[in-house]
Image (cartoon, rainbow, N blue to C red):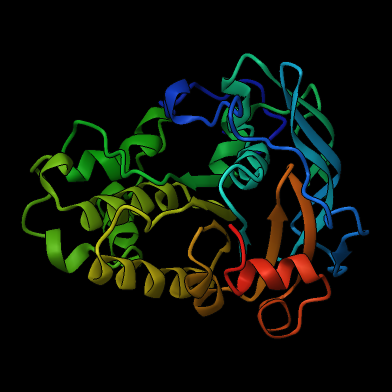
Length: 294
């Protein structure tokens, strides 16, 4: 079966429920004074993901002001900002998870490898095979560890060398050594950190090109968080990783580039992570990073 994102015959796969998707009803406040300066956006050559004047509304509420930026391939990009600034809304546009919200309306372009993912001929299910997602709260299916990882492959009838591919995904997710003798046991029996790594294994088993992570360590203890951060660095060797995080120290540790969204759903600055944290162009970004607000 074709993996083209324009393949409209791809079978449905189980996705997160609408309750998992940010509604945006309470996520937008008036833009703070000082946010009106033009954003500083570093240009990326041949981006794998690119937004062109992308906006999002939930009914009459604007959750995302026009965003234009390119995400580099093969790097970790962090998206930071205070609660309700549009970080997760932007992330969920990339693989069309906002389609699950009836009130959501997207305008502008979101390009994946030069193709607008909102074109009529793009199948969102096929798109999500190429752009996997890991959510804030671990959400393993009520199935065995093995079946969790193999789920997407089984649904699309792609069961060749399944054992090897499940093992490879679990190894890439740094979980194999911990679960190799209990693959038939329920994924729900794992610890929170293990469940999150199981969800990562499930995402990468489908061999995506991009992995989206929406605060993947926010619900985990420090030890489990450290394992997730180490894993993100390893995944960047094979995938493009885009991570939303409230934890600025985490963004500084794990990312190559950082995008800063501030109040009102506005992208204010996007640059190399070191530049953002050591010498940002915008005073509001510096104030946020140094803890003066947010």
